Amino acid sequence: QPAKPEEADTTLLARIDLQQGRVVQTWRLPGPGLLNDLALVADGTVYVTESRGGTVLRLGRERRVLEPLFAQIDTATLEAAAAKKRRA
Image (cartoon, rainbow, N blue to C red; front, top):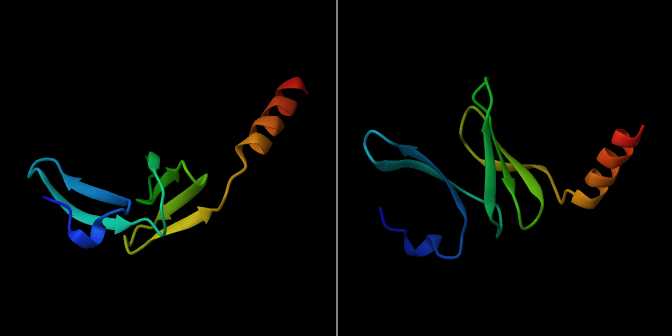
């Protein structure tokens, strides 16, 4: 399915029906970015990382909106905390 003109320069998360070979639903990222890792948890919630801004987004079970869960994660701080814990 070709992109729509209004989707140019946007990032979308897509639900794809592999058996039918088609996009079933899309969710627009609330700003520019690059979606990366994705996790689907037991309750049906989807978590996805956004690499450019360092955020984690959540798509709840009701599948209405892709919302920021954590904004602007400072990976250097996380790495420093992990290294400190390893030394302890």
